[in-house]
Image (cartoon, rainbow, N blue to C red; front, side, top):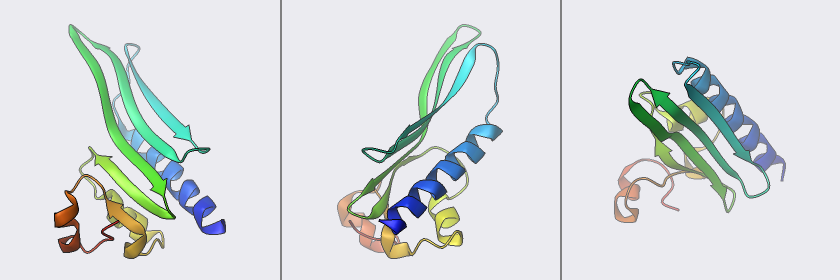
Length: 111
């Protein structure tokens, strides 16, 4: 359980850090969604930018079966590499946005 708490802390820290880099305005809101009961974490933006509706997920990370699942990575930096640098073993990180048959080639966990 200590490992899961550590992973939650790492994920929240990174999402908050990346969120602080996003452009902000009175019209576009950056949302930090932390569901620690079900272990779903998202960085989201919603609002209006001039005449365009903004509604999109920047990062989506889950913890499932003791592993960190990166479901969506809409940032330029490698979130998985950031987690490894924080001490998370590669075998505890799944790149969920890759098809299951491709995951064995990523250097990270398959599931």
